[in-house]
Image (tube, rainbow over all chains, first blue to last red; front, side, top):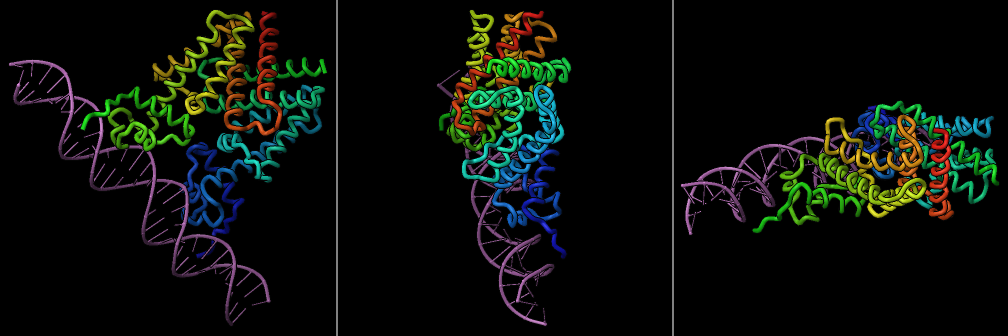
Length: 190
Length: 190
DNA sequence: CTGAAAAGCTAACACCATTAGCCAGCGAGC
DNA sequence: GCTCGCTGGCTAATGGTGTTAGCTTTTCAG
C-alpha cells in the first residue's frame, strides 16, 4: 500500500476545503480524513487534536486574508485603498466562508506563527488608515472600528442574516461610504 | 420519585445558562440535562433535537435583546437614543456571551415566532434611525450598517479579538461617535 | 542491503445525540 | 376516592465522533 504523503500543511488545506464546503462549525476529522483518502486516526500523525487543526486552519486563513488585503492595497492610497481593501475583505469571506469563519479565532499570546499572520492583516489596515492621516491610538481605534464594520457585515451576509429584500450590494456601498466619511473627517482634524 | 417539572421554556433557559457558562459552540445536551438534574434522554420530551434547542435559545436571546434595546430607546431620540441602544447592545453581548452568540442564527422563513423576535430588534433600530430622519431603503441600509458595526465590535470584543493594549472602551466610543456622524450626515441630506 | 524512523492501519474507549420501550406520577371523571 | 389514561421521566441500545495504544509496512540514510 503506497503512502498518502500527508503533512501538516496538506491536512490544514483539506480542513479548509471541508470547512468551506460544510461550514466551519461542522468541520470534522472524519470529513477531513475522507477527503484525503485516509483513515481518521492517521491524521494524528500530523495534527495535535481537532482544536489544533482549527488553529492551523485559522493561521492558514488569516495568512490568506492578509495576502488578499495586502494585494488589494498595493499601489493605492486614501479612499481608493479603503474601497479596494474592503472589497477584498468581503470577497474573501464570500468565496471562502468556512476559512473566513476560522479567522475570528484570537491567537493565544505565545503563538508566534498565528500572531504573525494576524499582524499581516493589521499592517495593511494601518497602512490604509495612514493614508487618511491617522496614526497612534486613534489609528488603533479606527482599525478596530473598520474591522468591526467589515467583519460584522461579512458575517451577517454569509450567515444569511439580512432578511429584508433590499439589495445587499447597495447596503454594502452605503457602509463603505460611511467608513470613508468617518475616516476622512477624523483624518482632517489630525 | 417526584417529577422535575420541566417544559420547553425551562429547558431553553437552562440552555441559555449553559451557553453563557461554556460558550455557545460547547452547548451540549449532556450539560443541559446535568444542570436540570435530569437524565439526558428526558430532554427529548420537551425539545426536538439539539438543533431545535439551539433555535429555541436563539428565539429566547433575540427576544431578550429586543427588549433590552427597546427599553434603552424608550423616551429618547436622536444621538441620545443611538448611544443608549448601542450601549445596551454591547452590554447584552458582554453579560450574556453565549446567548448573544445564539442571536446570529437567521430565522428560517416559516418560523413566525423567531421572525417576530427578530422583528422586535429591527423595529427599535429603525425607530432610532427615524430620529435621524432616515426612512425607506436608506433606513434599511443604515440599519444593516449599524447592526454590522455593533455586531462586529461585540463579537470581536467577546471573542478576545482585540489584541493590542489600547483601551477597548475608548475604541468603542470612537465607533459610536463615527456611527452618529454618518447617520447625522445622511439624515440631513434627506 | 539493512535497520530505524515515520506513516498509516486496526482495535478499543469515552462521550454525545438520538430512538425505542418501560414505568410511575398525576389529573379527569365517574 | 378510585381508576384510567396521559404525560414525564427513566434505562437500554445504536451510530457517530475524538482520542490513544500498539502493530505493520513503507521509505530513506548509511
